[in-house]
Image (cartoon, rainbow, N blue to C red; front, top):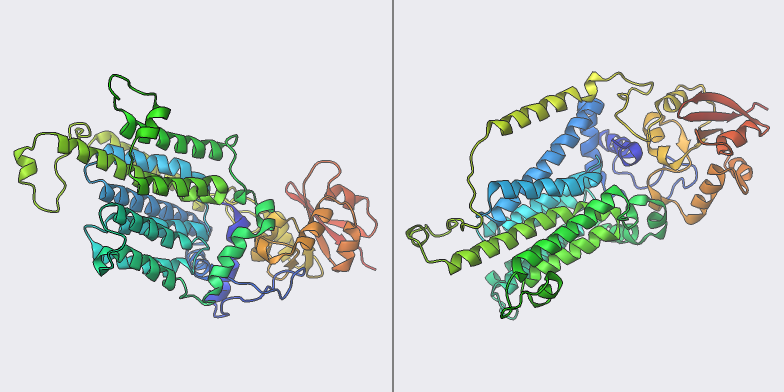
Length: 498
């Protein structure tokens, strides 16, 4: 698990649970001390901190597994609700494919809780025809979401896209009858529900400011558009191509006279449902616009593709001669599957064996069996978490309370050495561009880096182990600084006494 986004969430959540209230200003750094902090993720922080208090690092590992299982369990339920004729194996393969695409975005942080809420919203909307009253769960989910993660506008987007689908299914746009526009009302209610948070309308300003912050998009790799050259980007683009190919296969395999067009030409004359195409397009663009957006595309793609398969199955069934079973089917129940999709479904001992192996592997990999490091975390569980350096800073042997640190380690040091104030951390939006310029100068030991350390009266510098010419090497030859600690992760340099 990465400590970059997780560690500071645990510290903030512990303070909230201790009765200190939701933080409103920065008290952890010396570069932007006192700056306003709109802690929109406070509820997720309290939830994560409660799990950490109850089960430690092993508890957080189990929580992550449970959240991932819940998210994809909800997705499977949404797929089966949207497409009851679909073979169980096909539904399972759609969900497994979605997991493969979404895997890079499943780190333990507030976004993972938001993914669960996203999947729950998809499930509610998938079953809105059979259970219309459940639609009013969407505003409740949106209200929770607005206190968990900045992606909460997606709840409104999903409801709005569902409304477009309802219109395309024969609900006239100008018909103002309430039952004709229930989904639109739910979308509007969800938008209003997002205001149920400690900062009210400010939550929308926070979401917009983070999404449009040029510093974030420039410095955080997850906010950059994914590249097909990377594993996660390749899987994303491959999944988009696969969905396009499937739509072409479903809707464009027809002859025009005696001419059977190639699939690019056939796509132009196909007639797939336009709301489904809009939905796929919106979330494909979202996924390709930033690494963070990858999380949402596979969930929407699985449910939408299931709906397309269901629609084609219904069309195939309609062209077949009616059978006694289809004529006598009870109202509201799914008619028999067409021969094209009907598969033999049986329970296999191999499935049980696979499940047992996975459970045993999960138990064997639990962090509780691993030795702990100097800072008390199981070895090999966390990344961006130098335990020896953190333990040394927390020991009290380093005098002063200002430490200049690598940004990726800021959250970890805030959690494990809370008496120290750091230069930068993962709350990128708090720091103006000039602070990041200073951070770059110090990290590369260039420009006015020594003047910057003097200006802030920095007592200690944490330098990551880097090649020749790094900050660590520069401090070794700079008068006034002495080595206080070193391990394979890096070193701590402190000012010499006067």
